[in-house]
Image 1: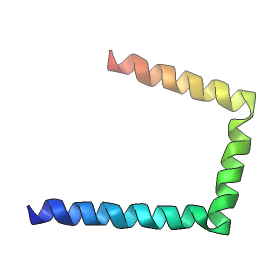
Image 2 (image 1 turned 30 degrees about the vertical axis):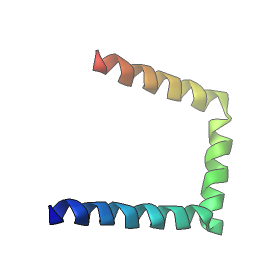
Image 3 (image 1 turned 90 degrees about the vertical axis):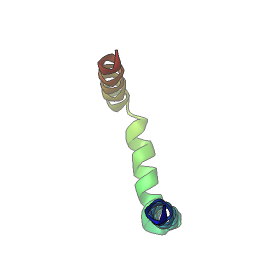
Length: 59
């Protein structure tokens, strides 16, 4: 039981660190770059193809 509580605390700490990074200037640059890349039609096609492959594996 203490192991479960510890893993929840670790996960909470990790989420806090990720949130803090995303609010930082460096994190904002990364988010902006990701948005620019996702706006490109070629990358959207790649994502759709990858999603269809992943959904096809479940069946």
